[in-house]
Length: 424
Image 1 (cartoon, one colour):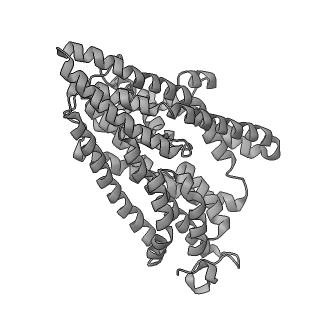
Image 2: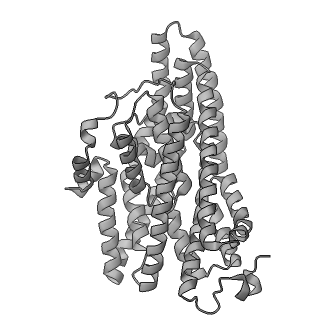
């Protein structure tokens, strides 16, 4: 399904450019080109409506299920606390780095897209600190879901997830129900993503109809500059891992290169998961730690996706000529920090996060359809980064636990490892 979707998306890109070029040539005036582009963009608009439809139940179910699976024992609490501390710091670094690079490169400037919805930008008055903090806390769960207020959904999802964990056995039927809801929403998301090639066709055709072929240079700049930012993030992640692992960071790179390459080629973290567990075993990470921290990281430690979220959000603002002050950019960063948690298993999850954040700040959500044209190529890089980041995080947590005394039979260092855990 993933390979076929990739092929059809590429086909949608090519046909969209061709159709847009033909329409641009045949349109007698700018007004006529804009009208034709509006019909092309209808496909992308329908796709965006469907994306908005799944945001609330998707965030709720995945976040509640993730929290409910953390467990409540002291060991899990200690390991989970350390893991979450690492995840939060890594996410903040990734978001900040993405913000720095997108402001440095400014890939969307000069594109001058025109938003189709109401409103010409952000409502600065609505973004003051007091109102923002108050808005985070919902007065109604139903109202937050109806309004697609993602921050409020996250807040009551956290309360429900923690409550289910505290209930223990009594809460298991609800946990099973939520897990079923996760599977259902993933299935629905898969159905929605089948329309992605049509959305790509419509978005590209509309852009080329009004702007001409010159718009393609922007896509090339966006992808290239995003990968430069990812390279900088890899260097930081590996340097942070080396602070705790020392020279064994090179052994870790050797062990995880295969699952990282698998994640890059398939643009799927899940495809790399079984092999990553096996390679972490061989590296010397105790299975009791990797089997807990790695799935937790798949939900809460998305270093590549974090960078992409700020990069794409600011690119869309730049493309529509919306100037965001530094304070607003920092607020967006903090919102992305929260709204991105818990939906890593969702296909094109970052697009859902970006769409939700754009709506939160009254920025043009239709810009997501524009980015979708090259999203797969950026998805490959950010997925590989997510997998590498989780491998480093799991190894560091294991190192911390080793200092407390790892039980026999679960070695860490090469000195006391069995052959199955050697670096060869």
